[in-house]
Amino acid sequence: MDVHGGGFRAARGTWWGLLLAALIPPALLLAGCGAGLVGSADGAPGGSGLVANPDFEDAVADGGGTLDPAGWQVGEGLAEKGTGNIVEEHPELVQVTEADGGVRPYRGRRFLKVDARLYLKSHVKGYYARPVATGGLVQEVAVYPGVGSYLQQVEIRGRPDFREVEGNEIFHLRFTDEGTLLRVRTGRPDYPGQYGFWKTYSRLPDGQWNTIRIALRKAQATTDGQGRTVSQWKLAVFVNGAVIFDTDRDGVYAQYIHAAEFVFIGDETMSGTPRKMDPRFTGDGVGVVYYDAAYAYTP
Image (cartoon, rainbow, N blue to C red):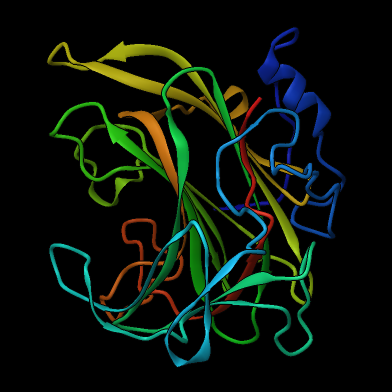
């Protein structure tokens, strides 16, 4: 299903409604730079900053003369199945840089380059200063697609409600040269691929920074058929200022994750098969994508 815009319904008089009302989409979905990201010096636009080093300005030396982002957990190379531990590092896959070809930072003097390759992991994880289990969370990031074939994603992950829950993904936004895929953790605790609900959209515009804003708001919990408590989140996703998903409009809650704990950026799978627009699989990442301004804050 291709989605090319549409209105949304916001709850007036609430934080959720105010946030959505402030970000009413422009005429064209996924077109142009939109309103952009707004950040303060401490990385906490309008609230309390949760991610260290959101602009990737601080870096630590890695092997091969490259730099890793300070304060972020980096995975780059061949990992041991079952544990995720890197057993053969490829330091060139994740780098902090000041320029790459014609790409320059979205803001500041540095940005993140993730070079995804089949059969290898290449990603960063930004752990929040504290798990977010109540109230709201906003995660922002600027994304610049590389040239040619690519597949990478941004995810919010957290603490499952109970052990039968499959994985820890709340939400997944996948960027590919064939289109953009959104999937939401909902439906049932053991849903294959952790998706339950999904939509597809046009690809991100090339040759520019694209701004992503993910807003989560804890909603009233529900119960499943076995009487277990199931957490629910309202979710709104904006790309270049345009809303592409909204719980109030689409009627879908993110479920089964009690607390949001970190943002995942890049590629994790080593399957050797990209499956770019198939929501049933995460797909093995390929190609280069750049990231900057990964602010996270509580409103």
